[in-house]
Amino acid sequence: MNVFWKINTSLAAFYGAVAVGSAAALMHLWRGTIDTEQLAALLSAGFILAFHVVALLALSAFDKLQQQSPWLSRIAVTAMQIGLWLFVYTLVAGVFKLPLHFSALAPLGGQLLILSWLALAISPWIRK
Image (cartoon, rainbow, N blue to C red):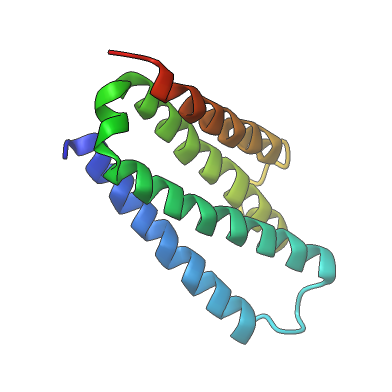
């Protein structure tokens, strides 16, 4: 496994820890202190993060994709990583008034996630 896929696996595992930790914190620490709209944003961010953890780990383990279209799989994974940061951080930063909150980044992150899935959809059809 080369460095790119090791970094991807480590980041995905970190995201998994963040997803579990934030879900636990949401249940125990913030009960009654956030409104319904904020809760919806946090749940959406958590769901997107947890779902993509599984996808990123699967992509790291899927050697055939890495060998068949290595450049496209790397582009897709990189877009997915950047899209997650833009989408999830923007939603969480909006709820907790964190620095560097630019609400326009969430749609950009979502679009990157969609494009990364479309790139993965065509990658089995591209040959080395």
